[in-house]
Structure formats: structure tokens, C-alpha cells
Length: 234
Image (tube, rainbow, N blue to C red; front, side, top):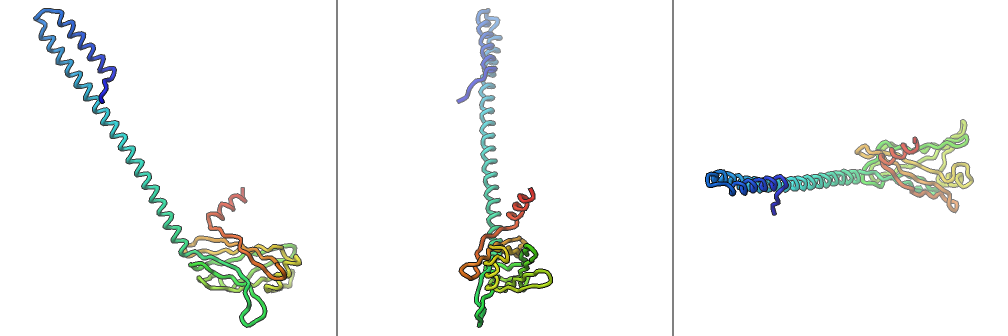
């Protein structure tokens, strides 16, 4: 439905006033009356056309806003799909490290092994050292690379002064039990995936009923580690 604005209405009223004034005059003024009528018709047509164009402009603006909203939604969906594709790609090559105690083949003792149970290789393997009192603990491993499904024996080397001790699973459990080293003992293993993404895996070594128990505490990717470092620095 078209509406007439105030300016158009006032123009029509003024034209009607001129028409009324012309009707009160003689027949010689009929030409003027005709002109006034034509002017009135033009004003009415102009007002209606202006309202139509205004409505069309408003409709076009609403459609443009709707198209912009839809484009933004599609862009958000595309970004989400891209992130999901990257995540799935990283999961497909992500190393997952585990530490366990297993018996030595053909022997009566146990050994501590680091195994990559993930689907991708682990590069740049490193294990955080420990220092307490006058002792240092270095956890040695044979290689800085672990393929998927590969295991590597861990050697717990305790250094005090000029002497050192290599601890097996049984001795390590005893030292933890008698508190010759931190109880529990935290072990943090670092590595990189084939995409150069950094990971950290946390384990706890404790003595339970005379045996060494190793439990998995969690993992973190490089973004989470960066946030933790910022919190510590702050």
C-alpha cells in the first residue's frame, strides 16, 4: 500500500486551493483552471512514483543485507570445514607416546619402555631431566625418532657427585618408596609430529606394593603449552 508523505500532501492541498480560487472567477480564467488541474495530476503521479521508488529501494536494501548475511554464514562454514580438515590431517599423523613396565624377554627382571602407539612417527624425542638435593636424574633413550608401533628402552641414570647409578624398574620403585628421589616421580616426554607440531606427554612413576607403577597423566599440543608458558610468565 502506497502512502503520501507530508510534502506531497501539502502540494496537493495548495493546488486544490488554487483550483477553488479559479472557480470563483469568470470564464476567461478556465485556461488557468486547466493548468491547475494538470499540475495537480502531475503532483499526484510524482508522489505515487516517489513512494514506489522508495519502497523498491528499501526492498533492494533488505535483499542485499540478506545476501550479505548468507555470505558470512557460508564463509564461517568454510572456515569450520578447513579447521576440521586440518585437525583430521594432524590426527592421522599424530604420535601418541606411552611408558610401560614389561618383562625382559628370557629374563626374570622388568624393563621400562617408551612406545609410540600413535599412527604417525615421533621426531625430536626428549625427556625432561630432574634435579633434587645433590642428585640429577637423566632418562636416557636410544633414539630421537620412534616410528609408529616402535618401542625403546628407557634407562634411569642417577648422578651424584662423581658417581652414578643405572636404575631398573625394581630399583627405581625402591628408591621412590624410600624417598631417595621425588615421590611420585613426574616424567615429561616431548616430541614433534611429521607436521612439526609439538606435543608433550606426562606420566607419573610411583611405588605400589613393591612394584613400579606408571600412570598416564595427559598430553598437550604446542598451542596449549604456549598458553601455559604465558600464564607462568605472568
